Image 1 (cartoon, helix red, strand yellow):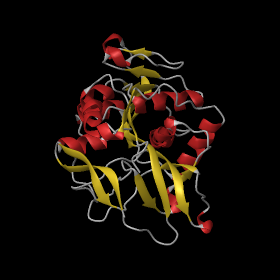
Image 2 (tube, helix red, strand yellow):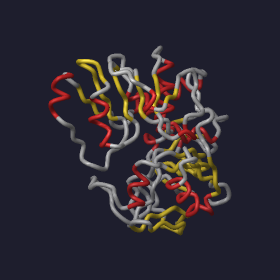
Image 3 (spheres, helix red, strand yellow):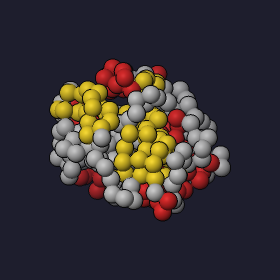
Image 4 (cartoon, one colour):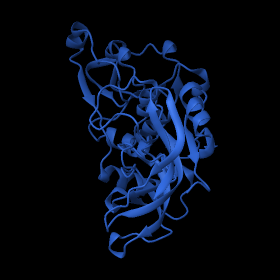
Length: 310
C-alpha cells in the first residue's frame, strides 16, 4: 500500500510524493486526513535546517502533528468505526520515511489510543486542537499569564485559555498586522508598555534573545514561562535575574488529560477556535503553501485540504 504525503528531504527540500503505507497491527486504525496544519515552529526549523538535535528527527520525514481526519477502517475493539471524525497528532507508518510527526499525509495508519474522538460536526478548526491543548497544558492554577508575548496562533490560544480561566492578560505583538483578532484582551506594541511588575510572563515567540528583556519586566519573585520551542541556547544575565528572584518554567507538550479538557471546552462553547486559520490551500499545492506559511507574516495558520488525495 502507499499514500501521498508531504516529505521533507533536507533543508529547503520539500515535496509532495508517494510514500509506502506500512500495514498496521491488527488493532490499528486507518484514517483519511481531511485537514492538516503547518507548524511555523518545529516544522519551519526542520525546513530551514535549524532544528537542534532531537530524538527521532532526521530526513526524510513526513511533517505535521495537527490533523483532522475520518476513520475508514477500524476493528470493533478499537472503539472507533468507519466515518468517525478524529483528531490525529501524527503517525509513524511510512516505512523508511520517518514519521516522528507524520500527519501531513492523505492517509495514515495508527494505534487507536493516539486518536481523539471528535463531534461529527467538527470543522477544519479541529486541526488546531494540538495547539489549543498545548496552551491548556501551559496554564496552571498556580501559573496564569499576566503578559503573553506574541500574538500568533499559540499566543492567541494562550490568551483565550487564560481568559476562560478568569485571567485578564495583556498581549505584546511587534507586527501591526498581527495585533488584530483579539478576544476580550488588549494587544499592545511592547514599545508602548512601560510596566515592569508583571507577575507571570508567557513567551510564545520561541526567541531566546528576549529573555533578558522579559526578566526586566517581571515583579520581584515573578515567573517567566517558555511556551514556544527555542532552537537557540536559552541564556540570561544572572544579576538582574538574581535581583528579581526570577523563576523560569518550561511548558512542554500536551498530555491526554489536557486534550480531553480542551475538547470538552470547545464542545461546550467555553473555548473558541474561530478566527485562527488565516490560509487554506489544497494539498496538491503543498510546496507553495509551506513557503507561504514560513515566509508570509500575514499567514498566522495555514491548513492543507486533503480532499480527493487519499
